Image (cartoon, rainbow, N blue to C red):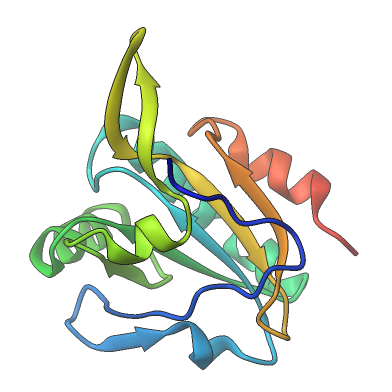
Length: 155
């Protein structure tokens, strides 16, 4: 079983390529608050809805002091297509070997239509300026999640 992160834990460090192939590290956000969200696959209906919700709420999140980073097991080319098709303006990072997904507890056993399968667990984390987990949410819903997140953000 994949271990889950809790508030107060140090967020696992990562450096992953973005949709342009440029490396992006969690340490790039040190001193800032960041929403790191993990999703199963670019350009699928649920993931598109969730990404567009983040896109549409980005100004509001930025005004509250939060950056947004999305992570999926997709390769750079697929992320670039997704970004361009949906006009996404925040970094999308690819983790094809699922190492980072696993370290964050966002890959493992989950229920899918009543069956237990291995896969990406749709998850969202708030990471504080000190690099510690402020909030860890697993098995979030694609629809309505960003609105719920905005309601629950620490002031």
